[in-house]
Structure formats: C-alpha cells, structure tokens
Image (cartoon, rainbow, N blue to C red; front, side):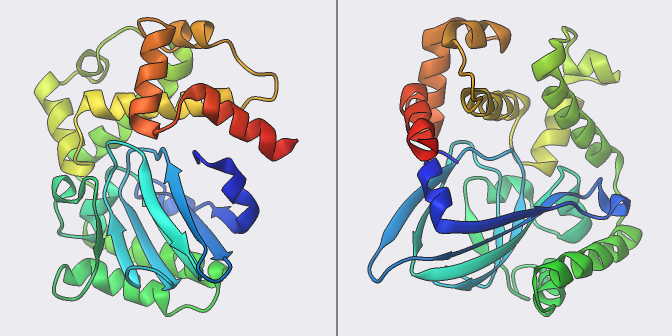
Length: 265
C-alpha cells in the first residue's frame, strides 16, 4: 500500500484458503471503509502479479468484479462507504474458474455477469450469497474445490505457479539459472505459461515481484540502505531502483518511507 496512512481508515483481514485449493487461490482478503461526506481517497497499491476476483458493496463500480494483473500500481478512488471480499488467484486459478483470457484483463477492472462469463459469474454469485466474511471464505473453498474437480489445472498452469514461486524464492536465494533451465523447458514455454495465466511476460512479472520486495524492505523498522538493497535485488545501482519504484508506484522510495514513519509516529 503506497499511502499507508490510509490504513487508519480501513478495517482489513487476510484469510488463508483451504489447502485443497492452494494451487488455485493465493489468499482471501476483506476490507471495509467509511469516509465522511464528499471525502475521497486516491489509493495506490503495488500488487502481486495476479488476477483478483471480488464481491463488492456500497460505493463501488460493480458488485461482482474481476481485476487483471497490473503492470504498474493498482489505483482506485475510495469514497463514502463500502466493503470488498476478494479472492487473489494463483496463476493457474483463472482457467479453473473462468473462460476469460488473462491478457485481456491486464490493467483493467471489469464487471462480471452471466453474459461476460457464465462460469465465473456462477462462482461469484454463490460466494456472494453467503452471509459474512467467514461464511464467504468457507463457501469459496467449497465452490472452488468443486470447480477444480471439473477443470483440473493443466501443465501450463502448473508451470506458471512454479515460475512465480521460483521468482519469489530468488529474491532471497539469488539463484542464477534461467527459469527455462530451472524447469527443464524452453524460454517460449515459460513465456506462454505466464502470458496465458497472468497476462504478463517474465520480465514484467519479475519487475513487480522485485518491487513488492523493495516496498517490504523499506517498511522494516530498522530501515534499509538503498544502495545495499539495490545490489541485493539485482538493480544496476541505487538510481535504477529509485527510478523503477517511482515509475511503477508513483512515489519515490524516500516519500514512501516518510509516510510510514508518519503513520507510526
């Protein structure tokens, strides 16, 4: 979250999915807000490269929504009052639940209806009918497990999941082999798996994963030296890190750190 002071205005929860669907769902989350009359917040978040499904209430664009992977920071105007229950999918998840093409969803947010995608609409409608956050999470577990039986994950989906996991692990292990070599496939196979499941290529996925780690490390209580962080995460230099962060996030690393310090006093 690139404007962390906004956390004071929200109530938010993360919920782990049933292990049976861990290859389909990364996490459930729920957020609710109540702002004053005429008040608006421009919220920006550097998200994990993923497709997200959401059930929304209040001052929101639509009730049932699918949001594609974002090549930059996800941005939305928050106003009045509302609530969202969301399902952040693993790369393989979209094909299990929908007939939509991930590439068509990139950088977009779309209302879901029976006309746009009957399969996805049925899933979201059943989850939305449950009363309360925990009931929705339990219903989502059941509905998605059922969908997984009807539409098992294919080889490209399994590869996409594994590639994203590897990219996350490499932030700390600094492994050197190419992704294709690591999985014994061609470069084209890696590109196709990510494009078909997330809608982004390996370079863009790697960039977002790395920027999420930058934001996480900047939030550490002890602080971090940008030059050291740049070297650890494979940037050319500190200026490269700063430029990349600002280009995607819309704020500089320094401004982000200052907003965190103001939040915690």
